[in-house]
Length: 614
Image (cartoon, rainbow, N blue to C red; front, side, top):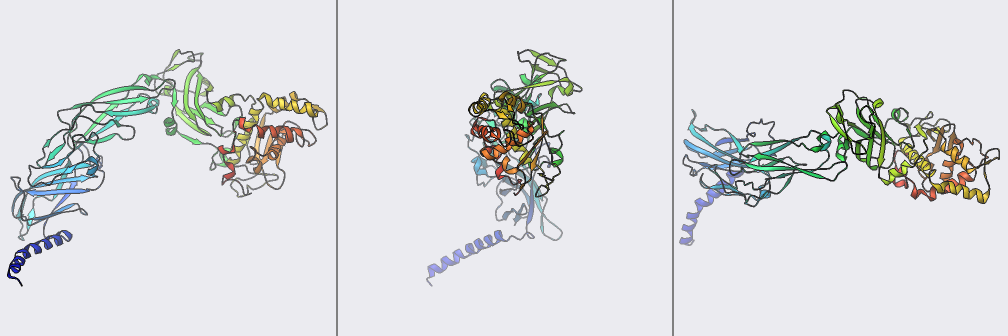
C-alpha cells in the first residue's frame, strides 16, 4: 500500500468510527445511560390545563444545553425522543447548566417562520417576516431552565431537573360577544376584527428576548367562524382595535356598527375581549327569523317519511284548511309556532299581529326569510323577557312591556308576502278541511294491510294530496277555468246530474267550492281506482304520482271529486262523464304550468322508496 495513503487512512479512521457511532446512537439511544428531560406545555397564565387546549403534539423540538455563561456544552450527545416527549442527554459531567428548548406545535412554514441554528444563548432562534400581516397558524413554546448534574450513591450522573414545562412565546386573543337581542345576533352578516397600526415583535432569541417589529398591517379577520387568534406579543404597552358588525334588518338594508377595544398581547397569556354588541335594534320586539335563527330554533319537517302514524293520523296534530296552509299560533310556553302545509317554500313572509290590549293597528310581529317546505318551528317571543317596541303598518311605535303570561286568546294574525308562490296561494278562497286516515290499514306493513278497498296512506301520499288539492282549489279561482266549462256547454249541451237533469255551470262552481272537508286515505291496487263522497276521499297510488301529466289518471281524481260534490251515482256528467273525463282533467294537465305546484319535481314521489310496491 502506498505509504501516503496509509497514513491518510489512519488519520480518517477515528472520524469514520465516530460518525458511525453517532448515527447508531441516534437510531437506538440507550435511555438507561443518560439523563432524561420530559417535556410538557404549560396552560395560558391564569388558566388550567383543561381550559387551555393545544392543537396537537410537538411537530418540531430544538434544544441546546449551555453553561451558566450561555456557551454550548461540548462533547455531549443529546436527542429529542418524539414518542415519549423526552430529551435524552449523555455525557454531561457534574456541574451547573441551562437547558434551552424551542418547541412547535403545527406547521411553522405557514407562518413563514425561520428557526435558526444557535450556538449561544444570545443568538436569534426564531423569526417571522415583518410583513406577515395575519395571525399565526402554529404554536411556539420555549423553556430556559437551570439544572445541575451530580453523582448519586451508585456513582451515576443524575439531574436536578426531570420535568421541563414549556411556555408559549406567543399570546392568544379570544373574543366573546353578547347581545341584548338574540334576533340581532342571528341577523349578523359580518363580524370582523380590525387591528390598524398594531405592531408585533418578529424576533425571539435563545435568551428569551423579543426584538424586531411587524409593519403595522394586519389583515381583517372574520370573527364569525373563528374567535381565537395567535400573535407574537405586541410592541409597546398596548394597542387598540375594533370590531365591525354588519347586520341585516327585516325591513332596511344592512347597517354597520363599530366597537373599540384595547389590547395587550403578552407571552403565554390569553387576552380575553368581551364585548356587548349593543345597537338600535335591541328593543325591537319582532321575531326576525333569518335562516340562522330558523336553524337554531326547535324545528322539523312535518309529514316526513319517518313521521309516526300516531301523529299524521291524529287530526289535532295533522290537518289544515287548504286556503290556510300556514298555521300561526302561540304555544303553551308562549312561543310563536308556525306550521306550513306546503310542498314549496315561501320567501319573505311577514306575520302581522293585533294585540288589542296595546293597539288597534296591526303590528309587524315576525319576519321570516323563508318558510321551508312542510316546516314546523317554535320561536321565543322577545316580550316574554323584556320590554319591547313594535311598529304598526302605518309606522307608529307601540311599546309592549314584559309579559308574565301570553296566549292565543290575546292575539290575532295576518300574513303578507311578495313571493309569487304565496300570491297564488292567497287567491284560494275555497276552505276545504283536510285530514288523513288509515281506514283500517297499517302503514308499517309492507302492503299497507289492506282493509276492504283501502290500505294505509303514508306521508309520501299525503304530500301528493296536498299538492293536488292545492292545485285543484287554486284552479277554481282562475276565470278561464269557469269559462272552459261555459265553452264546453255552449258546444255540447248542459252538464247533467244522475237523474239526467241539467246542471248549470254556476251551480257546478258553487258545489265545488262548497265542499267542506275530506278525510283522506289510499286505495289498494287491483280494485277500484278511487273512492269519494260524504267527506271521504281516496285515490290509488299510481294516480297520486301522475296527476300532473296523465289526463286519464287525472280524470279519476276528478271522478271522485264529482262524488264528493254530491253526485253519488255513475250516470252524471261528473263521474263517468265529460266534466271529469274531458273538461276538468284536460284543463288541469294543460294548465299545470300555471298552478302553484306546477311539476312533480318538487316531491319526486315516483322515486320515493316509501311507495308501496306495487
